[in-house]
Image (cartoon, rainbow over all chains, first blue to last red):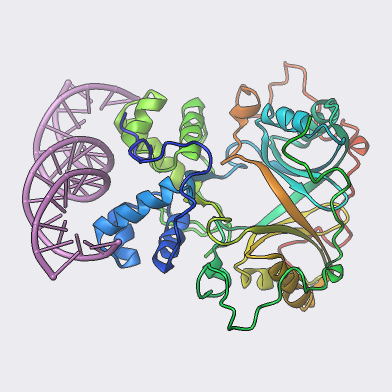
Length: 216
Length: 216
DNA sequence: GTTGAAATTAGTACGAA
DNA sequence: TTCGTACTAATTTCAAC
C-alpha cells in the first residue's frame, strides 16, 4: 500500500515490451548514472544533482521506469556476509532441442544468480553462490547433472571479484553524439561486417543453438 | 569509485572490513530479501512487509548498511535500451606477477561491468557491454591486448541473459539452522575435505596465482 | 522492541514561461 | 517541455511506554 516504487499509475500496463519509443538524451543518461550509484536517492536530490527542476525529474524518472529503461531497484548484498561465501561458474553444455527444459529447471534453482547463453565451446554460463564448496559440488553433480538437458558441465571457482559496476552506460566509454544511427555524411565507424572477427578467437555457437527461445 | 570494496558513509570510516560483528537473524534475511527486489521501498513499508515495527526496521536497516551487509542500492538499467546492445565475456590469461598492473588497467576501463579472478584454464573473466560487435573487437584487440599483463584472451558473446537475480540469499536454497558451524552432535554434512572434487572437473588455479592482491 | 506523537520531507497538481 | 509554487500525503525522527 505504501510502496514507493510500484508502477500502477502509468498509461500502459503491458507486462512485456513497452514504451520502446523513449529516446534517451543526455539528461536521461545523467539520471541513470546517478540512480545506478544511489538507487535510494530522492527525486528531489536527483533533480538537484542532474540540474533540472523537481517536476521534470519526476516526469523523467517515471518515464524511465514506465518505458523499462530502469528495470528495477535493488540492494547489493554482501553475499559472504549473508552466508554465501563461495561463488562458482558452471559452464554447461546443453543437449540440443532441450533448451526449454533447461530453462525450466533453472527457474527452480534459486541459488543461481545469473545465467547467460553464450557462444563458444559451452552453451551456457551459470553463476552460483553457495555456503561452501561442498554445496557447489552437490549442486553440480546432483542437481545439474540430473537434468536431461545438461550434457556436460565444467565448474570454475571465483577467487575474487575484482570489480562489479552497478551498470555500464554508453557515457562511460566515450560521449557518443546520440544513440541514433550516424548520418551518411560522416565516415562510418567500423561495423560488424567489415571487421576481422577472426582475430578475436571466439568460437561460434554450436549448431542448432540459434533457436534459443522457441524450442521443444 | 566503482571498486567493489568501497565502504560508503557510515559511522566507522574504516575502508576495509567493518562491522564483522553483526549476526544476521531471520528478520535480517527477510529485510534483505525485500530490499533486493525493491531497493526503493520505504522503511515504513519494509517494516510492514517484514512484520516488525517502524523503529526496529530503521535500526536494522541502518545496521545492515553500516555493517556493509548492504553494500549499495542501485538501479538496474536495460543496457540495450541504454545503447549497449552487445554483451561479451572475455576470458583473460594474465602474465604472472603482473596482477597489480592488470587491475590498474581494468579500473580505467569503464565499459567493463564485471571482472572476477577464477580457477581453471583462464585467470580472469571480464564482462563488457558495448554498443556493437566492432566495439568489442576494438576493446579486445586494441585495449586489452596492449596491456602487458594480458598474455592471452578468449572472447565469447552472450546471446541471451536467461536470468539475473538481484541477489541470492541462503534462504533461497533452504532454511539453514544458522550461519554458524554445525554442532558436533549432528552428523557433519560433506565438507570440502571429504568430497571428491575430482568429479567436478575443475582445473586448479595456475601456479603463482595464489597471491592475487599483493603483487608487484 | 514497540507505539504514537511532531517535524520534516516527499509526491502531486496546478499554473506560467 | 520545463519550471516554480502551493497543497496534500507520506516518511522519518524522537519521544515515552
